Amino acid sequence: MGLRDPISTFKNVVSHFQVRPAREMRCYCIPFFRSQLWDAPSEFLRLRHVSQTLYRKCLSDIFEKVTNLPYDTSKCALRNRQRDAKILLAGLSTLVGLDVSFAADRLFEMKGDTSGGLCMQEQYSDYLVYVDESGDHGLESIDPDYPIFVLVFCIFKKQHYVDRVVRELMHLKMAFWGHAEIVLHEHDIRKPRKDAPFALLFNRERRERFMASLNELMDSIPVVLVASLIDKTRLKQQYAIPTNPYEISLSFGLERVFHHLADAGQPNKTTSIIVERRGKREDEQLELVFRRICDGANFFKKPLPFDLVMVDKRANSAGLQIADLSARPIGIQCLRPSQPNRAYNIIKKKFRSDSSGGVAGWGLKVFP
Image (cartoon, rainbow, N blue to C red; front, side):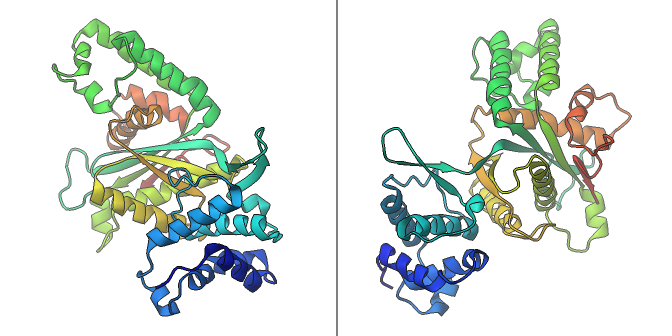
């Protein structure tokens, strides 16, 4: 299969779609572009024989010719059809003067910079979402002491995250370790080892001061929580072939995050969903499920403007640490509501809620 010139291919796409409405262009631009780009029958294109490497190289060539800027795949990763379409159509509009009448939907907005060249501002939302879990999502062997799976989504406004969350967490770490490189994990705090950085918590007085400072931090930070809790025992009892708890939780959580962003007036801007890497196989499975949900397999039956970001477990991410500290207290509260749970009493005020303050179904989804 020969790769054709991307710029001339663009012009073919324009001639084919210039008389069609923008909605139709969004739906059919990518398949048509691929069929024009490669000299191959359409049946080959339906299969997965077309090299994604060649496809992305072509897009990078177009991007650079249209914008006079280097194409950085780490910043402009093209992971689904909707995003490809937005880049192609934004490029078409700039390259050949096609009036694409959905500027609010574009991934990029052209603006002049001080150097006289073009700069690209991606249409990101004002929010970041960090995700962590508590419990095992497997169904083969269920722990009778913790037969649940919790997935928590911490929604931060970016300005609050930078100005307050990161700064206050760094101050806490420096006060107790003398530096900010320590990564807080709920398990290490709850069950510290004597040979680990959390060994200082074996000192009762120091532990009490640390827990008081941590509770004060968690109480003060501006964050909105959304959590999905799956009772794995009941799930197996009610369904002959139950869906994986992680997939169920992810779907419930992303739908409620989208509701929150829509309420904030940003339903169409791209929001990063940040998770920890768990291993090559698990990461691939997660990305597949994530893409399927965001491509329309959700309650709304439409694409969701989310971008999955995976970071190393060792990353010193303030948002992931807040998510880690929030997940287990939610699970313990649902398992044993009569047990004292100071951590939950602090974070329960952070749940997304309805106008009367109710969190069930809004900030906390328990299933089944």
